[in-house]
Image (cartoon, rainbow, N blue to C red):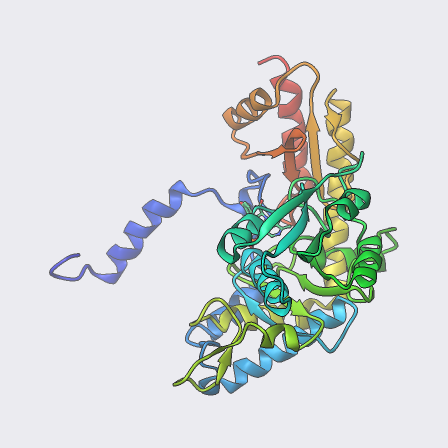
Length: 383
Ligand code: 0PR
């Protein structure tokens, strides 16, 4: 720390030097991120609420109302207006809260959860923190959760089953309808991780895409993760957790003796109201049509990219269901493709199951970026 403070302008200059080293989404070079350039309306709303702390909501009743309204709007989007939840830091915290609710509501001594092999690693964190035994269900031939494997894994200790609507690596939608039926029959908590797909599947359905049911319209679904900081275009960190019943929040409520609320169910104590303001503002500003446009454009570019990848002689792992393209080659190992693309300035990421290059076609990826990428993909065959 300096003895004498550095003048403001100099501070910004110093910061710019660091920022120059970062990649930007706007450059179109980030191909493996589920985040994107935040929408200007989200940024402005976020900045308006920088001092608001939802950890002490009695001081910020306006922000608290915004949170309730945002949760209702998200609930409506997910097939049920009366839901209970919070705007939190992201998918990890949402999945952790869901697993905590499921564990606490059960009276099981050695709790187990069942997640698909494709589940995000946040469930491993949740299992570790909550002392849950995590069983991994197999995937079917098209990388969706295999429900017969789920049924084999169910035991008296199962406290939750997790299905994913928009898997992290391939963007697949698990058979939630079937999971809902199984969970209702066996009285098991069902959590749907729609961190990625929650902000696109309903809009793509509106646009005529044939996608399966995955939300509270299915009676077995107990909770849903839906992340505004992914396809919702909100600034980071903004996540969402929705519960069908208030009781799920109550079973993990902790007494908060000196705050303006008596009980708190979130993991985080002091938490920003800015994320809530951004979520609310974007839902109101873009509306169903605005968000439909965002998702539709991403899907158009996804199709274009998938076609181009095949034309260049690479093999698609699966037909994209959402805006993720995963591909590999019979000639070049995946790591080599990745490093050659990286040498040409593309920040790609790898899918692990199966090993593949994975491109998430977020709204910052435009046609011109895909064109340049496909040209480089042709060239790397000769590198
Ligand atoms: N659930 C699913 C289905 C996810 O894909 C992710 C994250 C999470 C939960 C956890 O969400 P948070 O990261 O918000 O806690 N999926 C991306 C991933 O791990 C997150 C990401 C975003 C990674 C941008 C890299 C990146 O540059 O791949």
